[in-house]
Amino acid sequence: MAWNSRFFPGDFRQFFRWHAETLQWVQAVRCGCSNTPTNPNNMACLVCGGLGYFYPQPLQYTQAILTSVKQTEDLLALGLAQMGDLVCDQPPGATSLSPWDLVLTTWTDGVPFPGEVLVRGTGSTDRLTFRANTVYAVIQTDPATGAVTAYAASDYTVSGKTVTWLANAPSAGSAYTVRYNATYEWVVFAPGLVRMERGTNFGPRTILRKREIALPNAPGDLLPG
Image (cartoon, rainbow, N blue to C red):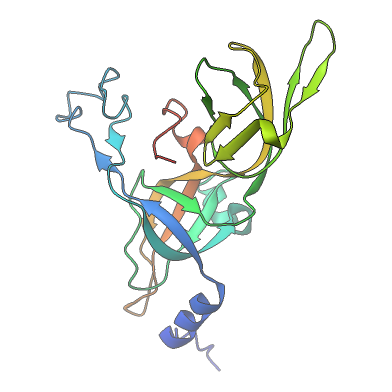
């Protein structure tokens, strides 16, 4: 007896309704500083900062199933992905994510982040690398004296990537650590792979890579907030 491998689109759509999550998504737009094949990215460009792409469009939303690349060994073996990447499966009919688009998860709790060292500026605010979901501690250490200063929640507020000091702030130029759960920014590193079963499209598959790995020289504020 032959094994029946027939694909049932209705069952597949039902699977997405049960397991998909909402992602925030911003389209990448090619910058005019790279207007010819012989004109590489302009590192002095004030629009894209030398990336060759920028993100002027508003946030959009899409549905997808995210899984660890560890569950898809073939992509690792082929060199299409590396450990730490996410596999993003979109449902049939979805607008396919394009190379260098930015994707943000909408996980309420964020992802545990071991801590980021900031240097206190001269204004009332400092900027984090990632959006903070929950801030657990703001601490300053003095290597010379061994002193550890833990700041109270009443000394500061954190909204998105912005730390605003209200009182008792560290001195300008000094370093301090913020421990928080983060919302990572992901870059579409490998474009959508079209998947077909007997002439039926069952949605693109895309590889997402953390922004700081895919675009290590990108400015910290590709997106507002």
